[in-house]
Image (cartoon, rainbow, N blue to C red; front, side, top):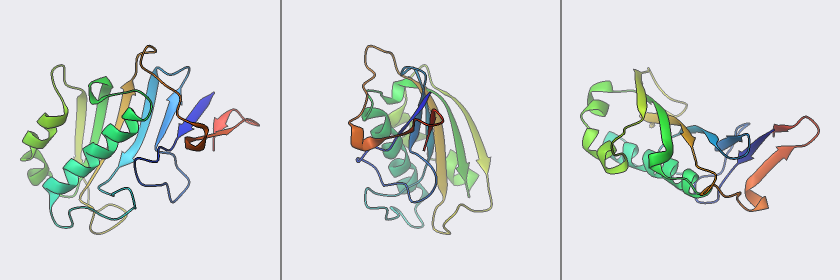
Length: 151
């Protein structure tokens, strides 16, 4: 059974998606692609890819924290950016969030994201050890028991 997680520390989903889905009993966590929205759903860093990368990584960190995880639990990342040169030049920001061993990454330049002012979207897969994994409070979980899948 999959459990969908929507922590209050980040912006609320506005469509048919969840912020993270926990696979199994808490080991593997698939995070929704994060963008540079603040907790109220407003874009942070219009026209500033560095600010957008920072906010996006902070959102990923906050989703993981809500279930006992950390950035060091991330196994892989996929970066989507509208400006790959500017994104690659911001490695110092990513270095603030990650340490050796680094997660595997894929970086792809795209024409645009769902909002014209967004320049970066990052999705992640993490493995949180059972000893740290915690189930968020019921207000942050959405499970469809009739099918055993996340709503």
